[in-house]
View 1 (tube, rainbow, N blue to C red):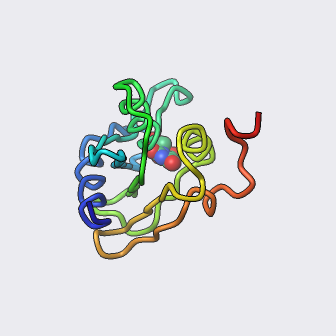
View 2: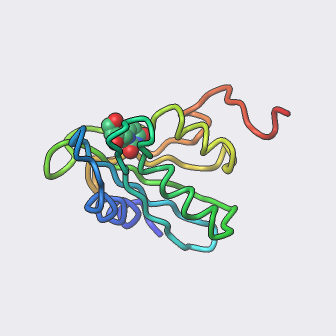
Length: 135
Ligand code: THU
């Protein structure tokens, strides 16, 4: 699957975002080694702290279905109808990626549109990370 298609799926996932408090709608599409895609959106909460980010929604859906091998994640986010800026994964989401992904090969595709995106490795997004390999 090419980057554009994965971004298109992240934009699709963003449509389901539940963000009544921030109005900041995020979508993610997580690609497995087998070519399956798990979509996720942010899910906010009146208690604020139970809010779940789009990236972690995608990861937790996949992990809970038994998936363990991941290739890339595309992330889009913003307040308006369409994303205008890059919405980079928060530190907590990067740490969750570190738990399940190979830092040198897993790719984090942060996108504004299907054509405008940054494609980085997890290691670039979270240098000197702490992961299962650290213990
Ligand atoms: N958010 C994400 O979904 N992913 C991130 O990596 C950063 C932030 C969400 C959480 C909250 O619903 C909204 O964006 C504003 O912080």
